[in-house]
Length: 293
Image (tube, rainbow, N blue to C red):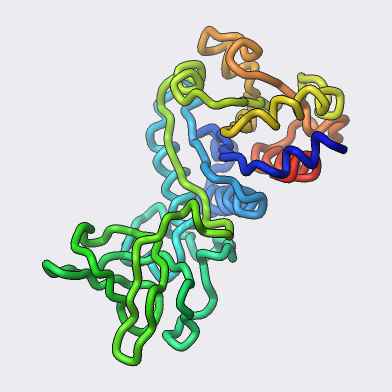
């Protein structure tokens, strides 16, 4: 179809919004950790650019859950060779060993100088610096050299290999927009009300998901025209025990007044509820099939 081909021409900035209570129905730290692993994998599989963790219960203090979910998501997105230096030992990461690897392009399997080629991209962290240059850990046997001192110790950078010599590796700061491959997701936290942060972020298109909404297929044509015109898109998900309609109502808002579409992406479900991480995977798969996200 013509609209499908047109949509594929423009890359969207794709965000997903998940509630802090995504882990509310999971009592043990091990299971909470595993659940966030499913979220991160789904986001990586479908090349999500940003995961927004939002406060969804105004009657509860969700600061701890917001911090835990965002910490796990950031940890998973970070290449393995940088995790110890950037995160250290935290009690929240006690079960990090069960997390599935993302296996994205910025999590390379090769870890040797010999495997590096000019033009390769690597994420790194600044180890030290002088007035002329900085030493950067890029996950190989020896640090790379960045000919700049406008960086901070322990700062994470995305770098491009500029030169490989017998005695040193030269790198330069990369522009992520130029990287042809998917380079992971960012993580942000929204503590204000759903209506407030949706208004402040000014997405071109916001799509909420709910089992109480019309089927996705019934609105696909109208949605397609909006998708084609939009550069920034948010797919918004509710909590395990409270959907988006309830979350908005508790904040004194009408869901259809603060989002552009509310759709059911799992129609005729055979279970009483669909967990957030399940709805996330199903929804991203449908959007990928229809709009090549």
